[in-house]
Image (cartoon, one colour):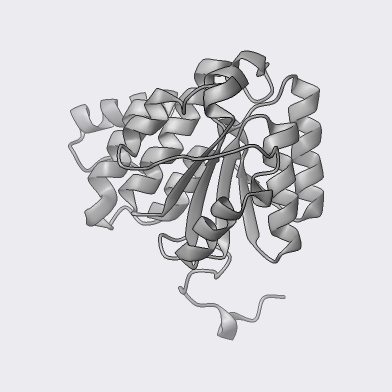
Length: 222
């Protein structure tokens, strides 16, 4: 039975907020996309989810860290659409497959003072799963954005998600992260930005918002 005297409207401390999260984008690069199969959707869907997630970070002023692997020698530059969301960010380039073995990346995350990491990357089974397991081992609360990540095959992606989940990671989607950060449509300071992101990247839901705003008015969303 629920003890009704203990029920309140205070949000759970387990929820993502603009004040407790940092976002980490790992290796969204051309060479990594070449090898990415339909692990969490086709490449276009992964790009769409990645950019939607990035715009969520920007809308809520959540610190975002971009990292690449062997950008000049093998994998190429950061995804242009992702870089365009953070034009002033300098991706941290490294040689290690496990981003958490790179001192500059670890220091960048620590410098934010945030203990909750929202992470997406390519490939799920290598450059995503390795830092996730390392961060969990060091006490971080890690949320893995499954649709902004991809592996070389559906099985590779699925099994990597299972491995991270079993270790304690929380699987989420980019839209889930966006709406969890907003949580209340009465938050007018981010309402406009969130609805624009939804219209641009949330497929049928976004079309629904377009329709509702045209028929009902500009404040139709949730």
